[in-house]
Image (cartoon, rainbow, N blue to C red; front, top):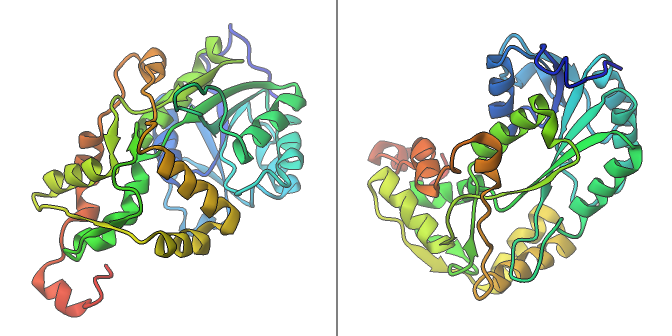
Amino acid sequence: MNLISIETVTQPLTVLVTGATGKVGRHLVRYLLRDGHRVRALTRHPDTAGLPAEVDLRRGDPTQPDAVADAAQGCDAAFWNWMGFDATGAGESVGALASEVEHIVYLSAAQLQRGTQGVMPGVWAGVEEAIRRTGTNWTFLRAGGFAANSLGWAEAIRAGESVPMPYPEAVRSSVHEADIAEAAWRCFVEPLHRGQAYEITGPEQLTQRHQAQAIGEAVGHPVTVRQQDAEEAREQYTAWSGRDFAEATLAYYASLVTDPERVSDDVEQITGHPARPFAQWAADHREGFTPLSSTETARNPSGHA
């Protein structure tokens, strides 16, 4: 294990990034490399990772403790992104990680509604507790909704169709993935963030309907919303995440209509600049929502890109 101290933290670190091929991970890899640090990535498919050549790619899955330990050997710190819908197996993998690194930054989730605080119950609370039990240094980035979840609307928007939503008036404080990644980078290089848990949100409260409208403004094409039948939404979410998680997710969206997520200024406290607004996220991703041309529509009558 390579120990980090306040005196040496300004020296290049070797950071293991899980989820490096995801939206947050790719930004984090770029920030770390730009800052002169070494990056190792644990990925199931290194041949198609598409990461910079400087990244040390290791094949493996975060659910496999042996693969985690092998990938983390010789690293100073790690960005932990647990993708399961429950915490089963997380303790073993986190234990393997903590045996090799001295600091774990975990992408968790926050409770952001009125009268709540702390970690979101469920998988996120379970993984946080597993990390605490290891005794290693930690930082928890408790994110709100990801602005990138709106990419799930891209197919309908590109085809010129209304976006189906079960709760269009649900109010979120969605965060740009670049802000999560920049906060994580700062937490690795600034020791004052160890032992801290932060709420990572965007700078504003927007309904999902208003988010869709912001995407329309970014692509220069109006976007409309369709009230989705509850059972249709339930089947869609269940196919993706399983019945229990789907039910909890839909119940949460329903509650956001009258009890919105709050905004936190923790991104600004960590990075030194305000969190990026949703309109900027939409502009940064406009290419993914640009309506299909008539030629593309003829070639893809179902609207699939």
